[in-house]
Image (cartoon, rainbow, N blue to C red; front, side):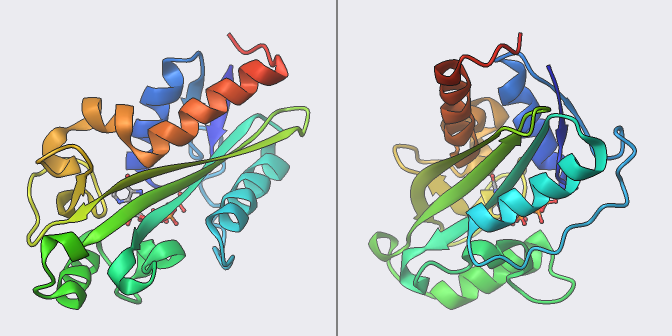
Length: 201
Ligand code: ITT
């Protein structure tokens, strides 16, 4: 089954494509679907609200099976920030680097045991019929003192997942796509599709 990815983030498309590919989906990007121009304003207070908003915008434009991801990092010492503001944490024109710098600055010299955090991903799948499935995945870990590694995107160089010594950037996509928040949400999606008896491969 083909699903249009309601995202303009190419890293997400790669990760979602690799994970969903393993359970029978082929992903199409917004530009491949002729929907490059659609840019949704993410003004929801929750990952669920923004994920649904992105999925609905693309589904309404093309009427095809659509998958959206709204995700972010929640840091305990910052009361859950940056949360839904993860992409624009350091303000207008934010980049991955400026966001990581702001995060390191705010955490300062807090010791490792006070640098706990989690990544969250909420995935919305809207089937061609209009049926919606919303799933959430979380990945606990720790914020490092400096970026490590080259791979991945966003906060990956600063995030060490629980049970590992390396950052997501160092671990690489094969491991990340098994244990990440996105992987867990998509595993839940696969289970829910099976539970509902949706045939897709
Ligand atoms: P779309 O809205 O077009 O999907 P986006 O990058 O704006 O793309 P979000 O609004 O969901 O996506 O913001 C998520 C941000 O959270 C993302 O830009 C990263 O900074 C961070 N993030 C989410 N998942 C991540 C991951 O797996 N690794 C590192 N950072 C991640």
